[in-house]
Length: 395
Image (cartoon, rainbow, N blue to C red):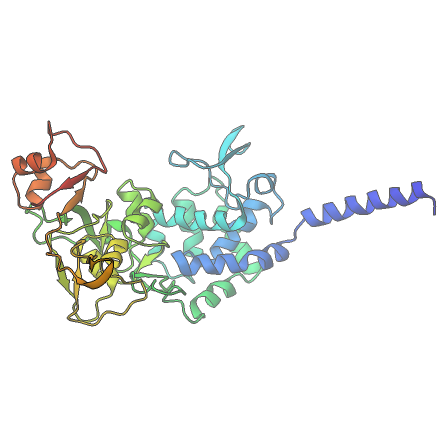
C-alpha cells in the first residue's frame, strides 16, 4: 500500500468515526442520560420520564445544533434572570438567546430548578409522578413550548421507549429520603420521594407567625428570617425573596440546595457572628446546626467559640458560648517559667455586623440599648451605616 493511499484511508476512517460519534439514536441518548434524569427527580421531583422525553425532543436525541454548541438539553431561553453564559440560535425567531452550560449535568440541574422555581409550573408538582400525561399536557398549558403537538410528542416518546420505568426506578430506589453525606440531615435538607404530596410551592409553604404584629417578630438576633414548612424548595424561597440561591445557602450554613424535610427557620440575610446572649443550654435532640439557627449566629463562629467541629456531639444540657467570651486564658509566667493561668472575666464586648437595610434604631431596639449609646460606643459622627460595618452593641 502506498503512503498516499494509506493517509487517504486514515482521513476517510477518521471522518466516519467523527460522524458516528456525533450522531446518537434515541436509545443511546436515553442510556447516557437516564441517570441524570433519575438524580434530578429525587432532588426536585420532576418525573424522570418527563425529563428524558423533553430531552429527546428538544435535542433531537442529542444531535441538535443547539445542544452541541451549548449543552442546552431543554431549549431553555435566557429569560430576564439569566446572567451566565449564553448562545444565539434561530428558534421561534432568528438569533434568539439561549442558556449555555458547561456540561449536560448543569443543563439537567437547571431544568429541574427552572420548573420548580417558576410559579406557573407549581401546579404540576401536585400531580402523581407516574401521571406522565398530566405532566405533558400541563407543560404545554403552562407555556413551556409553543408547539400545539408538544404533549403528544412527549407522550409518544415515553410510551415508545418505556421511559416510565425510570420514573418508577426513581421512586423505588432506597435512600430517597435523605441526601447522602454527613451532616446534611442535620441541616434539614432532603430529597423527598417524588410521590410525596407534601412538596409545596412557596406561596403555600410560609407559616403565619402569631406574633407578626410585633415589629421584631421576623428577626432573630437582628437577622431577618422566615419559617418554611416541610416540602418547601430552597430555590423557590430564593426566587420569591429575590436572593441568589448560593447566598441563601451561605446565609443558612448550607452546602446543597434541595427540599426541606421539616419545618425550619430560614434566614434571608447573613447571620451575625455574635449573639445578644453569652450562653445557650443545648436542648434534647438539638444539633449544633439547630443551635446556630435558633440563635441567629453563624455556625462557624459557634464552633470556634466552643472549640468544636461540625461532627462534634453535644449532650443536652451543655452550655455553649455564643460570644468570644474568655476564649483564651493567658499563661502566667515568672522568670520565664510557667506558674499558672490568669482568670479572665467574661466581659468581652458584643459586636453586631450591619446587614442590608438596617439602621441604628432597629439595631438599638434589637439589643435593647439606646441609639445614643450606640453612637457613643462606636464614636459615630452621624447615623449613616455601611453593610458589613462592625458595631459594639454593649459595654
